[in-house]
Structure formats: C-alpha cells, structure tokens
Image 1: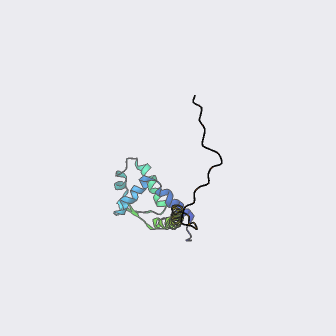
Image 2: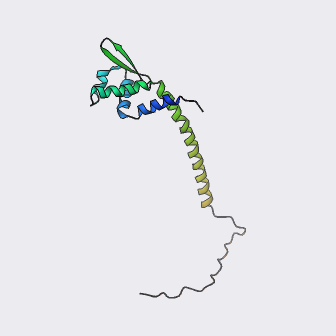
Image 3: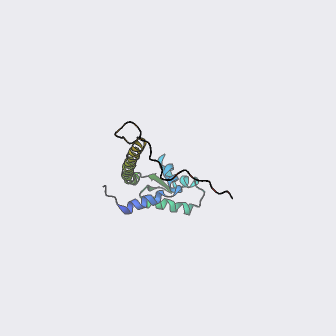
Length: 140
C-alpha cells in the first residue's frame, strides 16, 4: 500500500468537505483570481471568506501571491492527487469485494435454478401422509 502523510491528507479532506471551498477550487481551475474576485461569488463577509482561504492554503490547495495591493490565489492540485490515489486504493478493494459477491450470488442462482439430478428419469410419487384428510372445522 502507498504510504500517505496522514496529517496532510486530513487537511485536504477537511478542506474539501465544505461546499464553499470546493466552489473556490472550481473558480481557480479556470485560472488565478484576486481575493476580491473570488469573494464576490459568495454571500458572506470578507473576513469569513478569508477563513475559507486560510483552510485551503493550510491544506496546500491554493497558493497566494501579492502583486502590489492585490492578493491573487492560484490552484495547487498536487494534494488532491494524493487524496485521489488514497480513494482509488479503496475503490479497487471494494470493486474486488463486490465482484466476488457478484460471482457468489451468480453461482447461488445457478445452483438454485437447476433441479437436482436423480438416478432415474421418472419421477417417484410422494409417500402418502400418515393421517387421513383433514376433518371439518368449527365455524364460529
């Protein structure tokens, strides 16, 4: 199994857990933007929005640069690739488990649908029951 830096992976998954932060990453996928441009898309205060950017930066998902008075953000996708590799490892595991379950169920269905093979082709009559037919029932 591939070794992962658990602390870094925890930060990435925590950052991706919020829809606002995922939306910011989608915005940055088109190219670097200023903080003001990013914040305009979200109905929240600038200090609240800056906290989201701080979480993304701590996870290594964005890089900030200052050009004069303008702070620009750019996407850093490498940490998401590590998270995708972690998920892919378990995807292969669960696909294998589900394939094995499918084979088992298919085998069960095949054996349940086929009548058991008997020595003689003729059917044998069932043995008569020890008691006679059912008697009358009381009506209330």
